[in-house]
Image (cartoon, rainbow, N blue to C red):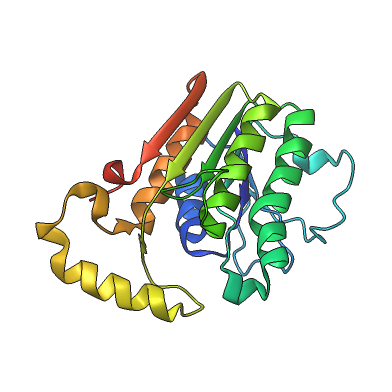
Length: 211
């Protein structure tokens, strides 16, 4: 299978990439990015693009499945508008591109609480993306909804780091749905959804993303 991986430089995408490259079911990984990836591999193709101006029907977009691990924060993006563009518009544009080229499955790293009617902006944007992906009609759509993601990011998110420290101490005492969701576990769920897609829509909740 040929798999498109969005967000290969991020925390979850960075764990998904080696899993895909090591899996015999995956013949090629197409990882579009705005800057060249440091990794080199015979099965890795890295189109360097302006995400605001995607080509109409490039050969590299002929994939069987898409994994989307693109994501930011309002602070990192710089504004609500920029956050919406990164977390909604870009994933949706790649989804349309891949679907038009024959992709059959889409696996999204979304978020617990995703809801297009949420009063919380972050949750609302995630919910809007889920809704709009659903409307595209992928034969297989998997929505992975982690809570707090555990792992070392290249960019520090101070509030997230504090929450991880607290939950790390309290973890054994908490219900599974409230525990930290390790990035490698999330990545495995996304990779399996892409390489062994099941018909219809499937949701992987945070309680299913615990070691």
